Image (cartoon, rainbow, N blue to C red):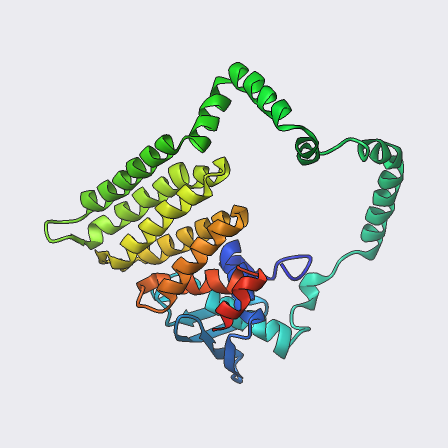
Length: 318
């Protein structure tokens, strides 16, 4: 975070919420900030809509926090609250939390002296290692014939690696996985719906847990395998189904799933090549201009925080 140590109030929020709230503050989405005599802070924070936020600090500790966004009304601490606190800390009263950021200068001096000694001791080793090509450099230097020969050698000696290679390169296998995983998503929806297609309050928690487990067990590993295109196809399918589902999510189940799928989309984008980025950008463009439930903010965040290539900039501005 911003200082060497966390502020006491930050302990009320998850790391993800702190990061997203600080991003909202940096993007200038906090407006109409006021501070009352009793220390209560109030502001409007713009996200999918304009949300009204009220927070109160007692020293460095968070005494009260309210926001009318769906996530907060479900009883959670949201990024809009963090944005207001960051606004206060950085714009209104930058010295308010200085005591929390104090450090022992001598301790830091010792650290840097030891660090410099370690760097000097490693100089010779670093010089030697700098002459060894990286894996990417070695691949670039090898001929196609050498690469194919090495692949045969490695895959015949490692059955697990051979299966993974087939999964990444065999279109039939990829198509089967896509159909299988989509079927699993459909099964979770069907299992939790009543005869009219509604997911009631008592089943909503099970619905969220089942989909969360599915994301962890099946979709995240796809990204790690390098199957970004397949991961996006399945994630976008899941998001579109969730945006339409009829559910009593009084405990914020849809908002929690929105956060999980947003993180997954960011992981996919971090590994995506340009053609896949174009596909994801078009998908975000499409859904940014229509009603998309709790996922409107997901699409907005994905568009704001990614696609830095020049070909996307003008489209983002539009």
